[in-house]
Length: 441
View 1: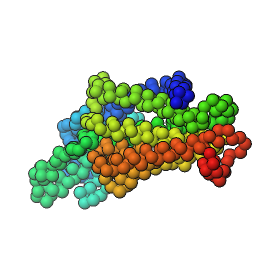
View 2: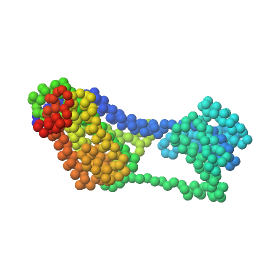
View 3: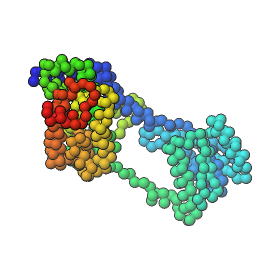
View 4: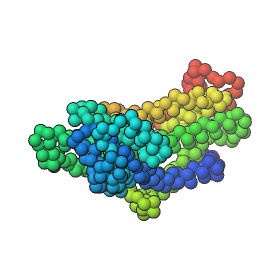
């Protein structure tokens, strides 16, 4: 036991002293702060002053109605293109573009000449775009927008919506129906959704989606990064013949357990630092966002039981996959072979993280339940399920037992492979040879 503990201390110390560990530990919190800042900045991106010309070929003055919807006050119609009032910010804290509108009743003017004039102003950056409203728009004739930026979906949707409302109002008036009364009757209702009850997290749907995503992603990334660290460590010691000296004073299974536990402890330390910083950032998130001039969405309420579920399956998943990676390192004789061997293992993790949408859509459905029982996907799927629904005690206990027994079984098999594989040289052993190691070791 003392020899195993010595290996644990050595692997843990060597891991936390590396530059990669320090950089990763620092970059994790920096990424969280950057994510908050990015959300605030992205909410403001693309907003600004926009000047568009509306060419109105109708006799009903639809251009004026569209202008009134885009700007806070109707633009004054002018054959020479007199500018209307500027638009306003959107509702809430989300920045929206401000529109200035020029009305150009087409009348008897030459359309192509007017188009050439306006396009020249667009090229000179005096205008951002031109909105063409044909005379038959109420009968279904298409509206055209030409502009320097035709990929800003939010702005184009505002322009399209303004035209839609104006045309619908004209159609209702022509049918003798008051558009104002119809608009009031069709006014959208305020709608919100919240997850409540049970021992799972509660809050808004977006907050729960983000929590579920982060839980699954943390397990996925840490298992891959530190599992590959185990693989590289085993392969390097085998290739450099260091393990031959070490194996003379300690049993192979003790060495394997010490390596897995030591590197796993380093991973747990790093994740604990990230979690501690995340808790601090979440409690102070509003203040951080306020410095950038924005606000954060409502955060979910997370019960302590979810932390226990996450911790167990995080550790169980790491030891399960780290044992597999250690066996791969003992079998491989080069980096290229190691990459080939670890591909199927990584695909198991990819399958697990790909179950996120079925879990979100139906956390008690067949895919979610099966994924949380299968030992190779449960370390990722079960914490995601526990974040959004209360797991039946039978399912949770069954998953814990299955994952634990599988991890111990894989560790036992990996120790047999490791015992012979770390001393084997030459070409990579075949599947039959590996099976013989398991049977005879």
